[in-house]
Each structure stands twice: as structure tokens, then as C-alpha cells.
Length: 639
Image (cartoon, rainbow, N blue to C red; front, side, top):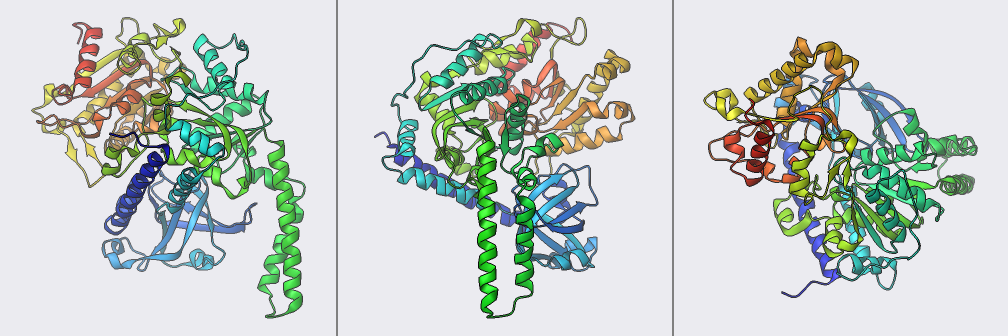
């Protein structure tokens, strides 16, 4: 078979992205039509009912309205900055209306989430939106996530630009990334960074030597963020400004916060999800509003709005006045914008955010992409066109990007740019080899299976544990109670996943017993924190409701978090319990066959990992068979 050219590679990516776009759009349409409002609220995709608060114009001159969630505050929602949403109302204002499909009426405008903090959200709406009607409606108002067309359009556009590029830097990077052509390097003496370990120091030097591309491969707990911050800091000794991107808002916030702690001036494009004053202080919007010229700009914008409202049709002076005010406003906007970009050393945004209106015309020598193994290749090309060289950091043995279309996934849409470069250019990859998170025995299995046994534990954490004579890993086999119906998996609702009630009860009982063994006072004094993980969302919700009902866990509320594997990406806890859920006669394990998910789950624990699952079901797969035998080996003959 003839090797495809770089342009053909990207054309194929575009085709697969189109399949994904149609699949997601269709799934969204079906879900919107078929799913009852209660289900949408439970999934975190809708707020209903809502209270609509005050309206105002934000620093970027967008009309905004506040909305407040008045019920179901304990449900984790999926609203975050930049996501599109739709408002709706129930004509009868009653819960029964929900079951009579016709009563739900959507408003004919689309809005965008501008800011979320708990149960309060600020939403940017078009100037023509009927806000008065929303604020005074007698019916119950709600909002739900809309389909995100914008991100797709940006990804298509980025791929088109890369495909059409000729004779420029973008064309060079495209041809380099999609072939085995050697990447170029600078050659100068390595710098010494004695506070880093040898592989971290090597990674920073490789970043500085790279003319085109470098990859920092960071397995769990190996200090990838520390290394990246160091590499950015060293790059800023040689360049005036860099662009730092990541797939998710949370990952951008995390790296931005670390850079701010180093005293680096960061300008965050878009709004942070981790809402605190420190984070908000370096957002573009806040800095824009804090600029000395902003009050003048605000009053000009106000004058423009008043002029429009009191317009005398066809009046010549009206048009002249409007043009004069507009050009003055534009002049001020450009000035504030160039000052903000001029002062910042790091511009930070999501991959899609790198296409923001305020980034118009910005170019960078170096682009850093964090969590690059979680991003679709098309999304990476959005910021790449602004840069001369690209540094990717992440771990392709952990969570992959989310792809909804099975056909597109099998045809290779899930293969990331980072994976492609690791495959084509192993010489540009530095593997971080010392981990600082897990007890040696918890880490060893992951290191052997995913990283050719190359990852080692730092000596100071090798034997960390909570109780003496405790095994750091335990697998509680639920197939022993297989006769019990409650330990069989159940299917709940389409696409909502599976649940295993007996296993959920046993998970909490196990945690209760472990806490009792440690002793309440010690758990609270030492703040021993716990993560309860399940790959299935339905199981997560069920576990959360059980914890809320159990009196025993009341004092420990702040120390226990329950979430999906994806929800724990990048996090760690002293104790981790994993409820695998699957228990059936024919060894079906669904998406647990994607072992990268399991790699994330088993590497979150610092000192104790407890897996609950049916060995009879799980061990038909070679990975879980090996894991089960490994854990049994640690425990010896102990129960």
C-alpha cells in the first residue's frame, strides 16, 4: 500500500471529523427530542427551573444576563465557558407539561456561557434577545446545552488552512508531523537545573534545543506540569512571549495558576472554570475592564446604544455621529488590546480559544500544548498556525480524546497528533521516569504494562502507606456473591450507562470499614482524602446518593469525592476505591476494554488502592487477568 502524503493524511482527518460532526449532531437532535427534561437535568445538561437575574453589558460589549439554578443543586453540571445554550419555557408551568412533548417551547436565539460559579451563570445573549420576557415570564424557564457548531467550524477551518498551506512555516510543520522526516535541532550546551530530576532536566533541554517539535511524555505522577512550567520559564529567557494551550479549560487553569505562582505575567483568554479571585485576576476580560482607558470606552459604547435607541430615521447627523463614535471606540479597543498583549509573557487559552477574536493577528515563536494526548488532531491545528515551533506534553497511555462516532474512531479519528509524532519521531520524545505519587507496588503494574517498566518511584515515597502491615492494593472479588441478584450489572436508560447496586453498597461498606480501622480522629486530623471512581456515570450518581444518606460519612464529606475516571484525570488521593460495575455471564466489559481508562483509574492512589469487581467477568480479558493475579500476588494468601 502506498504511503499517504501529509496532505492526504489531513484530508482523511477532515473526512473523519465530518463523520463525527454528523454523528454528534444527530445524537444531539435525538436526545433533545426524546429525552425528558428530568433526565437532562440529572445528566447535568439542563437547568430547570431557572431564576433570571439582572442584565448588563460586559467588558467585551456583549449583552449578558445572570441565571440562577433553583433546584437540584447537588447535581454536577456540564455548563462551562464558551458552550452554547438554548432557553426554553413550559407553557403550562407544570411538571406534568414535561410529559406532553408539545408544551416545551424553545426561544429562537442561541446564547453562550460566559461564566459559571456554582449555581450562578452569566450568559452572553444577542442584543435582540427578548430578555424582558425571560425576566417576567409567568411560565417556568429553563436552559439546556446546545450543539457546539463553533468548535467544529474552527477545526474544519484549521485543517483547511493546513491542507492549503504552501511554502510557509505551517506547510513545513504539516509535512514534518505527518512524515518520518527528521526534526531539526539547535545545538548549544545543556543548562543545569539541579532542582529537577535527570529526566525532567533532559526534557527541559530537549524543549530548548527543538527547532520544530518536542514531546514531553509524562506518565502519572512524574511531575509533567513542574517540567512544563520550567520549560516555559526557560523559553521566556530567550523569547518575549509564548502561547500555552490545552484541550480543557481546567487544564489551562491548572498550568496558568502554576505560571502565576512563578511570578510570570499570564493573560488568560476565555474564562476559568476554577473560579477564584487569583484566577479571575489574569483573565482578558478583567484586565480589559481594569485598564485606565476602559471608562472612556464604556461611555462611548453607552452613547452608541443611546443613539441607536433614539434614532431619527434617515437623519444625516445620526450616521456621522455614529461613525465618529464607532471609530473612536475601535481605536480605544485596539489600544487596550495591544497594551494587554504587550505586557503579557504567556497567553493561555484552550485550543479552540486560540481562535478568539481578541487573538487576531497574534504570532508566537513557541506554542506549548498541555494534555496533548486528549485533544483531537484537528483542534491542535487551530493554534499551530500561529506558531513556529510546537512543544507537546501529555501521556497517550492515559485518557484519549472523546469520539462519539464508532466508525470515525475505528478509522483513526481518535489517533492524536501527539501519538502520530511519537510514532514517527521517537527521537523528539523525552519520557519522564521518576514518579512522586504512588507506593511502589501500586505504580509497578502500570509501569510494566504501559511504560516498558521504565518508570521508577522516588525513594521518599516508595513505601508510603497508611496502616502498618497493610497491602497497598486489594481486589475484592464480587463474583463470590454472584448468586445474589443485586451484584449483577443493570442497564439504566439509553447512553446513561450501567449500575451495580450490590457492588455500590459493598464499596461504601469497604470504605467505612477502612476508615474505622484507621480511626476517625486520625482521618480528620491528617485529612486523609478518598476518591471513589466508577467508569459508569449512573454508578457514580448512585454512589453519591448512598453516601449522602449514610450517617457514618457525614464528618468526612469534605474528604470524599466520587466521580468517573474522566473526572479524576490529573488528580490524586490517598485512598482510591474503584467500582468496576460489570458482572455478567458472557464476560462483556464494554468500553473497559480501553485500557488507558484503567491506567488513569489505578494510578490516582498514593497509598491504598481497592478494586471492587467480578473477577469471573473481568479476567476473561488478558489485562484484567494480569492485574487480578498481580494484586493477588501482593496480598499473598491474605484475604
